[in-house]
Image 1 (cartoon, rainbow, N blue to C red):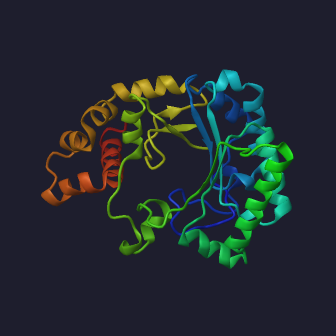
Image 2 (cartoon, helix red, strand yellow):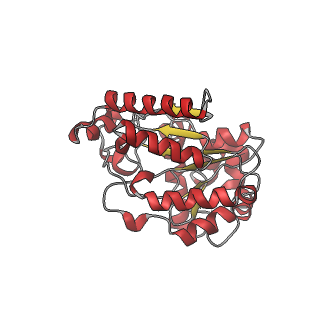
Length: 288
């Protein structure tokens, strides 16, 4: 929903950082995107950047979802908000945030700053991750007691990324800090969910097969996402990728690859996928 962030992490794949308010979804576009989501949507994650740096936008989106939830999401859908937690560095702030998220019907909170790159940013700002955890856990306990429930949210996730892929700022990292192997979670999720694509939608409404792909399928502000995904499944890239995987994609679009390159297709499909789709875009200049 935004590229604006209070951190400028060295591993950020989206080059997020301060003073990027212009790269935030508008209220009008957010409503169009939400109404164009598939009616079968079972999970919706709101992320950035840092959503808490654009609180009015976050509230507008959550308020709209709350008002039209049955028309936007499937029954019992999971609604998740991601944050690095830096702006929750007091018991009072953490409590107000959790209370508000609960009132909006958010079912999951994901704290995404448990890695060395986020720690660097926190230390520069004098933020103690340990103290923040105490405040967050204390606020969660306070809300649980107030609501007389054991778990105000279905899930509280704490995670990080110590071995990023070479996208965005991470391209400048030393090789020993990068992930040497990868797994295409978008493709594995596709098969696990009964051949259902879980797309990524950027702040401007552009739809992608996954969050690392830079070749858009189209705009969710103009076209129902179901239509864009159906077009992708039938298109030159999607029809091969979803049936034959990366080996098939490489065979079709890069048949003369060297043996070492072919090994990379298997070992690091994320990088391979981006290279191939970039090649296709440059040569054909057409949607995938």
